[in-house]
Structures are given as C-alpha cells and as structure tokens.
Length: 302
Image 1 (cartoon, one colour):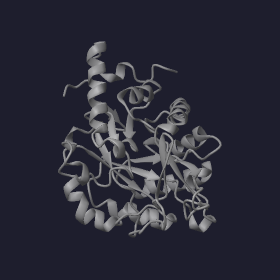
Image 2 (cartoon, one colour):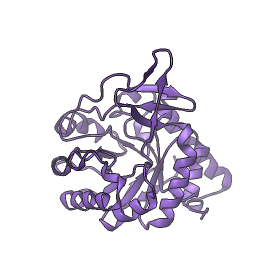
Image 3 (cartoon, one colour):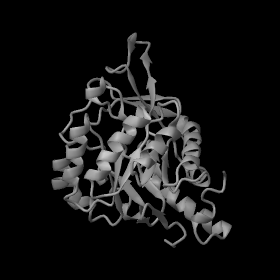
C-alpha cells in the first residue's frame, strides 16, 4: 500500500482513514478469517463499561429497509477483562486500536478511564449517548453542558487522547460538538445510531423490550453526511465520520465534506471484507486522480 491514504488524526497516524466501527466488529477476532486486520487504518473496540454487562433482553437485531435496528444494550466483558484478555491480542495486530468507553454515571466513566491508563491505547472514543442514571436517564450527549462536563472530567482523568462520539438524537449537533471541543476533546466522532422503533404485525407487538432502539446502515447515511458537514464547519478539531458507509464512494463523500477518517459499521455484517474493499477503492481513486495523498480532496466541499 502506498502513502496516498496516510492520515493524521489528533496526532495519531493512521496508514489509511478507514476504521471499523464500535459494536460491529467486536474485538476483531471473528474477522481475521477474512483478511489481515493490519490492512485497516484502525479498529474501534466493542463499547466497554467499567463492569461487565449482559445487555438487553428480548430481540436485539431487526432488519429494516436499507438498515438494521439494534437493541444490544452495550453487552461487553468489562474493562478489566478487556485489558487482560483482548488488549494483548489487539496490540499485536499492527494497526491503531481505538477503545470505545461508556458509563452509567460519572464515577463509572472515570474509573473505567483510569484503568485504561494502564495500557498504551492510541485513542479513546467516549460514548456520551449513555443514559446518566443520576440525571433521570437522560443521555450525557443530549445537552451541551452535560456533554462538556463529562468530557472535561474524562480528559483530566485520562492519559490518552479523548475523541467524543456524538448522538444524532439532538436539536443541534454542532452545538454539542463545540461544547466538547471547549472541554478538551481532541476529536469528534459521529453519528451514533438514530433512535427508532419496530412493530411485529404478526405478533401484534412492539419488537424491542425497551420499545426504542438504534437505527444504522445505508438508511442513515444522508443524515450522517449532513451532520458531519455541520460539525466540521463548527469545530477546529478533526472529525471521524460514520453512518451508512457501504462503499468507497460513500467514504469519499464524507472525506470531501471534511471528515479526517471514517468508520465502517453495519456493512461489516453484510460483507466481512467491506472495510478493506473500501480502502482498496480509495487507493484506486487516488491513483486514478493522480493524488499524492487523499488530503487533496479532504474538505473541498464547504
């Protein structure tokens, strides 16, 4: 692979701007049968919390036109098990590992971050779509002041750079991004899933035990692209975009509106090789266009 796709994000160097998204790639092991994960620009871990979580009950995945709705509930082994059993493997892959972290309250966020200080993580993706149990279940990422507060505290507690992952279920996503930037975030990632719902007419029931769940896949791409454009124009820190990216052309659209990197999520379920095929497509595009580096087209659409 040439240097055409080499990308820098908040001081972290990626061999290319394509990562796999949290929640769609577990910790990578299942995908090693399909390709060498070292080809990836990076991979983002399954979302971790301080304590292990079993996740939600009932149906967890429901297909919908051009996408899926998921109600996984942050099922994960917990930070300590990740450090002990998954990190040694991930650290030897030869690509950037981004660790996604969530929490139920301020204390659980901060303790998880402190424990992760024990390993040389390149970048942490802070999931602020989690409900704050001490604030009536309202997600941290819904209000600018709440987003800024948890971001500032996590940044102070962490030895690693903090990229904040934003929820699209807000009135003004750029306002949230600006608040996180002001609180010390080194970058922004977006979008998380869009709140959705499904009904099973045969059973005459709402599909999910929690009623509402998260929509992802090609159906959300136009919304994700719009929000990426808005955030890129609002902040000076780099943006990592995701939301329905299924092809190299999709990835290029996000890059052209200013995303430094992209994450491939739902498409991993459709085609396990999706991410490397997108990398190959971007490489071929740069070669065909005579570009020394993809930076030449990054952010050209204002």
